[in-house]
Image (cartoon, rainbow, N blue to C red):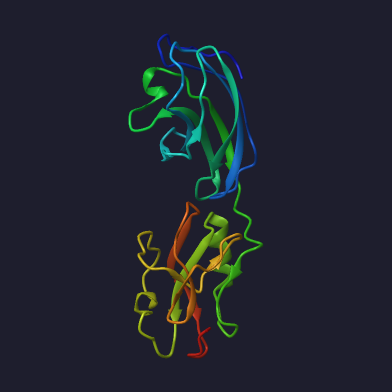
Length: 230
């Protein structure tokens, strides 16, 4: 990458190189960066992070994953940086920056933020597994399309002849609910996710970690009998 202005002062960064592995929506990937502490103060509390922006520079994901970095004044460091792709797939701009948590981003102090134009691909859903009774009928095309948007865990509503206690929140009706407060019952999960809960005798996944998930009542799972998994 070319030369760029570097402000004078205690906290300044010179970006020397950056490379990015292919990016899938919602999935983790890797960037490799080389930076130099061009300021007069050591980096003790700084972290490398990033923003995902649209083509006009508007933030889509502002707070990227934090990655540790430390350097003395004048020191150059190389780091592999964890990056999670935005949702949904499409064309984005990726801007790297350093952050002093709860205080400021270095861009706010006049530092340069290198940007890359990135084509984010659909997430590979080929290994997705539906955890449901064998006689269940699922909306496989909609589930696959939702995984491809970037979601590692996909849950939906349940159609049953009788609704046992505990399954009331999963009645059909409505659409996506990003604030759904219950586990995903009979979910479709990408590896390495596995069910970690149970609701009314059915396998369930309670959101944990930072993998993207979604509950969409338009995705309907039809249970052919009241027989549930032990």
